Each structure stands twice: as C-alpha cells, then as structure tokens.
Length: 85
Image 1 (cartoon, rainbow, N blue to C red):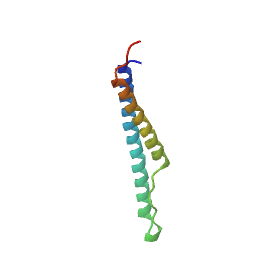
Image 2: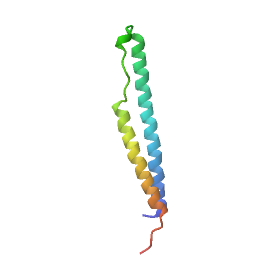
Image 3: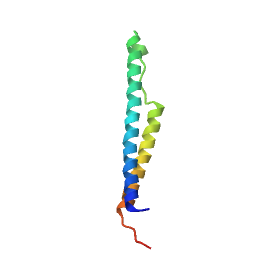
C-alpha cells in the first residue's frame, strides 16, 4: 500500500479509539448514576451497593486499545519510505 493510505488508516484507527473510549466513559457514567439513584432510595446505610465497571465498558476499552495500537503501527509503517521494486 502507499504511505498516504497507511497514514489515513492509522489516523482513522486513532479516531476510532477515541470514539470507543468516549462510548465506554458514557456507559460507565450511566452505571454510576443508576447506582447513586438506587442508593438514595435505600434507607439503611449497611445496604448500599458498590459501583463496578460495566462489562460493555471493558469491551470498548479493549477495542479502543487494539484500535489505538493498530493506528500507531499503521502510522509508523506509513512514515517509513518503502523502496520501489
């Protein structure tokens, strides 16, 4: 592939990683709000629920890490000049 195509794909992968991290953060914040609402309705202090990281957030963070790694690799490959055969 040409260097400019590799650079474009690398930048696309990095934007995809940023988008996936944003989606993951949204799932985490929604989960946090739900647990806070539940804990407000519980009167006993011993029965409060602890928040955790939703499974969907974990998946999106893993996909974002993979996409970010691919983006960096593609940018490095696009930066190095390739000898023409």
